[in-house]
Image: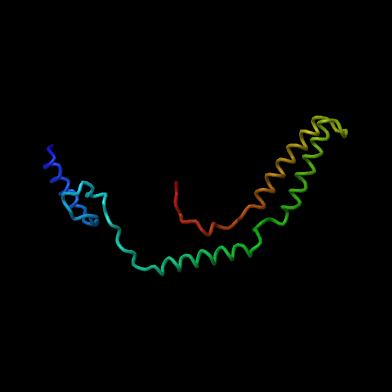
Length: 134
């Protein structure tokens, strides 16, 4: 294609894109084309302020609420810590019990820790979730 034919074709393509406004009306400008556009003016600036206020209200409300958790979570964390400590002490023969008992206590401690982590996790939805999926 020659330069004149290219420019003519480029102008046709730019005209077909009806939702865009060219930044420059000068046909001799090398930078005018479908990518050089001016966004439409925003209709209401008040909408952004309203959305900001809603988000701020949700954030303030979430700080005031205690975290959702199970009533047994403190007990589960205590069992986890005690079982893991006893397991380590038995594994290094600081207290009697043997390797098998130390292993069972260690596994029990990890299971208790996992249950405690699930029990203390939030059960509610994310107030800032926009529904986007990856």
